[in-house]
Length: 120
Image (cartoon, rainbow, N blue to C red; front, side, top):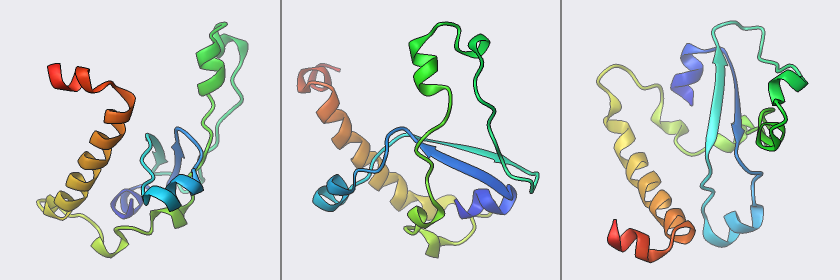
């Protein structure tokens, strides 16, 4: 995030689901999909309300078109000591990639039956 914010002065980050503080306390994990909207303009980012033409009678669009569950800057405390990533300096990400991959594997083992993974 520090690197992204170095390039883009205005960003807003949204997660798929709200934070589950109980799960974070219990499991020490907060694994979710996120989307980051950024612009090089310092004016900030806002979203207009969707119109009927945007939704097109789709319950999914109605539920998910407008971003929800905004992530606060304070939620990105982990990794702040890494600093800004520069060209050819991506080795700093290796430990985070491994941790993320293991977290993803754990989540997917709960979502998809073991038979799918074993036969994949």
